[in-house]
Each structure stands twice: as structure tokens, then as C-alpha cells.
Length: 302
Image (cartoon, rainbow, N blue to C red):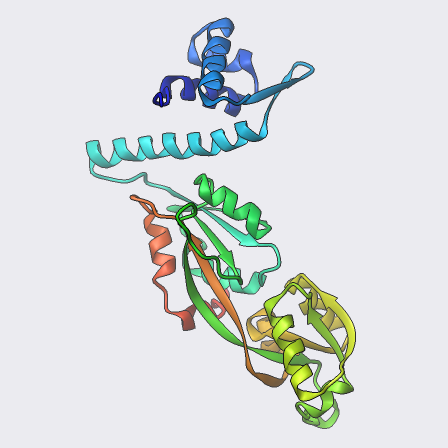
């Protein structure tokens, strides 16, 4: 198998970044025809078209998007290598790219990132999406880390490193009750209008199984995939929400919501997913070395 021509890859990378063949040619000080030839040779070597024309504009194909992710990582590593070996230092400003599953608690994400917020030497790029989409970006090194509430398992083809960084019991929360009347768990589950995570959520599956074992048929007011929306509904629309307390930490602190009961044996796990790297960003190691109890604690207000 022939080796990748990095000269051609650099030309492709320049065109992809500029989004325009003419500007890229001017920047590289080559003719447009020479640049087009180099990219065609790279496409022939890869066996895939990297660009498609729409009118006068160039757009990356799916293969082009994948190649761009690899090119970004390759040339960033090259720059870091030069700084590290020639000057004995890393780049002054680290860029850390973190993806989070779209339904993951925003409070948890902020707590996790708290040590880096406000630091002048770290630039954070934060993205959200489905777990499958984020893992694709992680695979090609356009992300350094993925945060998820679902574990993934590595294989010979997918070398995921998945570690649990925190675990929290799941609670039933709601507005303060008249005369501070206590919530009778599990007896009131059949009476209270419940706000529950969507059926694809592991918490929901475990809660449904628990209710089945207890012989309880509950009243469902709403099921919500997004924890941020579930938090708002618990605060503004009434009902009893099934959530890890980190999701509603601000409302619990202010008294807008109270914890009715901790559901026995029900937990939310939070995972950090990475891939093996020779030069992991120091800021990433700093985040992953934090104790679990710190990750779940809200950062003090600035």
C-alpha cells in the first residue's frame, strides 16, 4: 500500500480551510491548475472524492470532512512537535475540544469544566450532539474528549477509553410542599404527576423496572429527553421530576425546588471517553484526575 503524500494533504487542507481554490493558490504561491492536480492525485490515492462543486463554490464531501479532521490533527501535532523539540515547550495556549451528549446535564458539564473556565492559557471548544456523532469526531481527533451518561466499550476496531468520572443517586424533586408535608415514598408515586426522562434514558428504564417490581402504575405528566428542559418543567410547571440532583443544583440551593426522596438503587453515571494519544493535552489530564466528589460540586460564583 502506498504511503500518504503529506505534501498533497497540505494542499487539500489549505483549500478546505480557505473554501476557495483561488485564495488557497495565492496563499500557497502556486497556480490553480497545479493545486487542482495535487488534490486530484490525493483523491486518486485515497479512492474518494474530497470536494464537490456547487456552482462556483467548493464543498467538502463526507470523505473530505473525514480527511479534514485527520489533517487538522496531523498539522497541529506537527506544530506542537516543533515547539516541543526545538524550544522545549508546548504552545502557550492550549486548545481543548470537548463534546457532550446533547441530553447531558448542563450543570454537570459546567462543574466538570470549572478548573479551566477563566484561564487565559486554555481555549475551550465545546460541542454537543448524539453519542454516535461525537464518537466519529473523537475517532478522527477533532475532539479530545466526549462526555456521556452511557458507557461505551472498546474493541479491536474502536480503541475507546471510557472511564466513569462521577456517579450520583437519582432523586425525586419538586416544589416546596404546603406546611413542609413530607413526600411518602413509594406510596405517593401512584398519585403524583411525574416528569420523567425519555424512554431511551437508562434512568427511565431502571425506574420503570422498579415501579413494575413495586406494583405501581404511575401518572406521567411529561417525558423529556433534555435534562435542561426537565429542570425547567420541574421548576415552572409543577409535578415531580426524576433527576440526579446535579441537574437542579441551583434550584435546590435557592429553595425553588426541594428533594422529596432519593430513589434507592438508582444512579446516574457520567463517563469521559477518549482515544489513545501520545501527546494528550495537559489540561485534559488535569480534568480527568479530579476526584468524583469535586466533579459534582458546583463551582463558586465568580
